[in-house]
Length: 208
Image (cartoon, rainbow, N blue to C red; front, side, top):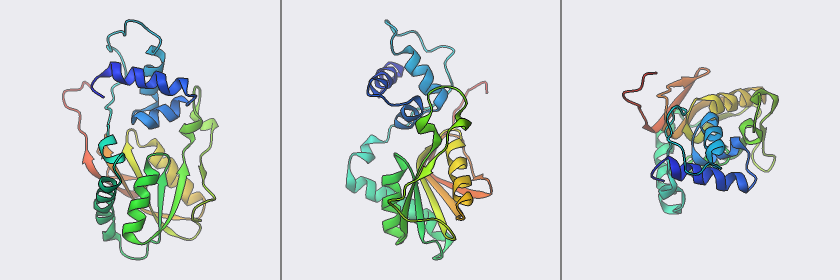
């Protein structure tokens, strides 16, 4: 995707398919506020100038995601960054949707079991997101009394990663470290858990 018009068009297509704004945010690797802004403008013609919109960065990693070999190589790099935490960790949790295939490759590299977590934002369209709840899939490994890694594709605000860490602790698990492809905030730790990234995206020249 090259510009805001492309993102608006993609947001419109995803909304027409019935995805919530939270799911659209996940698909486009943007914040919920940005997803709402894009959806609201998707019915406008011509497209308004994006002045006054949310400050955000779109990360398009589809060149990796559509190729299993590339995905495996990236997963190996992520696993290498996590391996410093020793051999006691026996579970890798992927945050759905995009974090799950990455977590699969990481789990294979490190020889751990695999779990997945669907964050509350996937249900969110409007209003207070705290009214919703996330969930772990029963089709994958259980969490209680296990040390684990947490894997996702991007960190935009850190809210979803923090939610996942809290959910793991609530289930009796021990999140040891988190890793993402791209971190838009330069976050080094969340809730006492170290966070690693292959790429940090740093905005320059912002008033914020």
